[in-house]
Each structure stands twice: as C-alpha cells, then as structure tokens.
Length: 395
Image 1 (cartoon, rainbow, N blue to C red):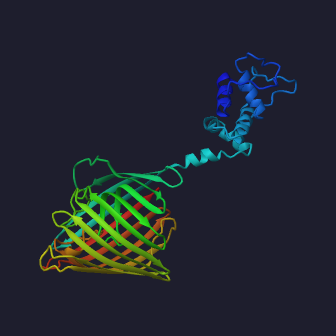
Image 2: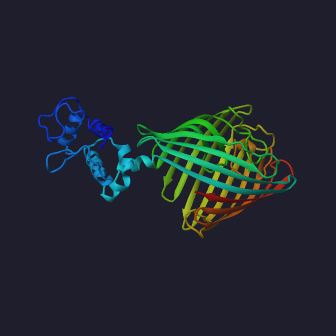
C-alpha cells in the first residue's frame, strides 16, 4: 500500500498521533512513518496483515484486496468517496453498494427538449413562422428539502437570415420547504392555473401552505416579456413591471377548483379576480374559468372573460400510441388578462372564438400536437384563423 493511501485511510477514520498499546505487526516498529496510521487501521479492523504477523507494506496488492479494505473503511463510516469511486466495480462484485456515491451521482440531472413548430395565420392578420426551440434543463438536489433548477434556451427562426446563436439562461430557481411552507424563488416561468390570465417569466418568490387545500402568495417582477417567438398582439405586462398574486386551490376528489387575485403595477395597472374548476370523469376532463378586471382600460371591451374546454384522453410522452383531442371556446377581454397562454393570433382589445386540437405520441418521448383557432376581435370585425403544429423530442 502506498504511503499516501495509508495516511488518507487513517485520516478518514480520525487517527490521531496517540499510539496504540499493542503493535500488531513486526515489520512496522515504533518510529516507523506509518506506525500510528497502520495501528489505527488494524485496531478498527480495516487491515489484517498476514498470518506470519507482518503487515507487508512493501508488497503489491490486487485491486480486489484494496477494495476489501475500502469496504471495511466504509463500514466504519470513513469518508473514502474518492477511493470508493476508484474501486466501484470491485466493490460491486463484492456486493458492496456505494450508496453515498450513488446518491451523489443522482444529485444533478440534465434533461432536454427540442421542439419544432410551424404557425400559419390567415384572415385580417396573416403570416407564418417556423421555429426550432431547444431547451436544456439542469436539476440539482441541494439537500433533502431543497433543489435547484436552471434552464438554457435557444430559438432558431427559419424565417430570418441570422444565425440566432443567442442562448438565454432563461430559468434559475430553487424550491424547498421552510417549516410547513413550500417555497419557490428565483427566475421562474409562472403559469397560473389554465394560463388564460398569466403565463410569464418572472423574477419572483412564491410561498404556499397546505396540501388538498393550498393557499399561495407570489410577488415578483417581469423579465423578457418582449422576447417571445410569436408576437400575439398587445401585451400589458412589460419588463420590470411588478405583479402580485394570491390564490386558494382545492383538490376535491374528481374536481380541482381555484380562486385567485392578480394585481400589476405597470403603465396599465390591473386588478383581476378569477375562479375556475376542472372535473374528470372517465377519459374526459371538463374545465371552465371566469375572470373579471377592475376597470375598462380598453373602451367597449368589457371587464369580463370566460373560457371552457372539453378534453378526451391525451398524449403521454412515455406511452407510444397514446393520443387525445380537445375543443374549447374563449371570450376574453383584454381588461381581464395580463399575459395569457395561447399560440392563436389575438387582438389589442382581446379575443373570442373557438379552438380544437389533437395530440399523439409517435414513439417514447416523441409527441406531436396540432391546434386550430378561429378568433375575432372583441370590438371590431377583425378575425384571424391560426394553425399551430409542433413536434417535441424529449430526453
């Protein structure tokens, strides 16, 4: 055994300079450079020496002999992670699981998603866009209660002649528990319930309490609000605008229900209330939502909005051949949303119309979706029809 290994092993077991009463090995006398370390290892049962009473420190060891020593040190609680990693195969053959190393290896996971999408708009507004979006997620386990998530994103617009080389560090947040509170803090994409009021990038902190009935509060500010692949009309949330959300959600058997309050501090200050629910029965899910703004920022567009959707089954990424269809209707005033989720073309005063969509899993982690919207303005005769198709590859 090399001098460095003897010392490292002994230090891992907490050896001190104090001598042990008995000298078990005739070839390691008092005054030998390894005397204290070898005596400590022998006293702990980590090394045994040879039947003739010698330690044999000048002899070569096989990897399996060294693995046996590492296994004994691990059983004594020694921190020998580097040695355990080096002899992991031999330890496995000996039936010793390197549990701590396995756990640490799982501390960081990298996953990804590539989405190709094509969007075509016809009507009073028309045009098309073709985009390849790549996302890389990094998830790290900080401890039993806290984790970290980061996400890098690149968008390649095939309709322009630039390289689109920019890679954004788009998400960076921690999740964990403080007492009985669930906490999310950092740069996060907040999609509130159906997303019909808010789907936005925020620098934020959110705390929640409860399980089947959950009470949540969020405070944050917007970022990258203008950096969207598709420009869907008039957004009312701008970079650095403040936003506050309070909500209560409940899981009541087959029914999930929620009520929420939204407030923005921006050039168009808004206060919005909403209530919604979804009900699952068999392979069907029926969802509906009502929202109301505090004032008419946009004249004659009203203060109210509502949405309903009926879905049957749905494509599951881990189930090839799975599929789903859905149909919905929107009637949303711009006064009753902040930055909604939709790939449809909509208008400065809001939108109303219907939507149908299908999804299908072609192979494990390869999912395709196609949606069609027929939307019109809340206050004019303008209308637009949108087809949005997307193909996901997940890894």
